[in-house]
Image (cartoon, rainbow, N blue to C red):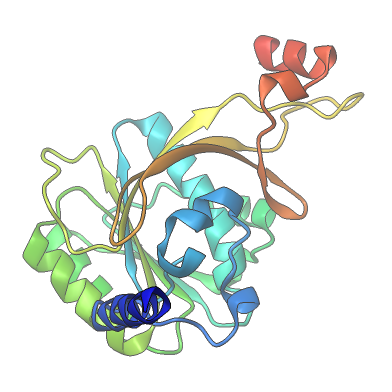
Length: 245
């Protein structure tokens, strides 16, 4: 009897997820973004492609960090082909930096619009194009109605939308599948090599529809996202490099 109830509840949950735009991929491996424990926070343990993700950035430093993290996401979203549209009033992403994440800059089309309301219109129209791998928007304000229009567009096209809100005056409710905040962490140099190490981030999911909020530390390597080891797992030289960084 208990097993029957669990099956009914499980089917109801899956029906609700489908109604809200969370359509399970036929291949879990193909949907995996390499985010490790972060991905477990989402429904079905899978990063919601075909949804709109909202990124809150409260400073220039966070804005640059968020762009870098999104570069890592694009490396997975664009693996199977397609291009990305990056739309804003003035882009803060350095195109050649995409190479760090394995994305060729010529596969990202940058579109600058004079006003934010035009950015929102262009993003909505872009999200309807099934041939795109992703659409990134940089803007300041977005209300629930505007976010709902974007979410409705991706539920038909299955394109992933990534909205960076730079220094928003107010953070209200939106229809986005997740709200993120990305903060920088000191990089760690590889032993014997000069310069700057791979990017590292404090990744926080502030809200997740039908999922679990949380905070994690991730880094980037040639193989993709990697969890940042806890201090107890580091040797003395690694800890010293972080302290000096």
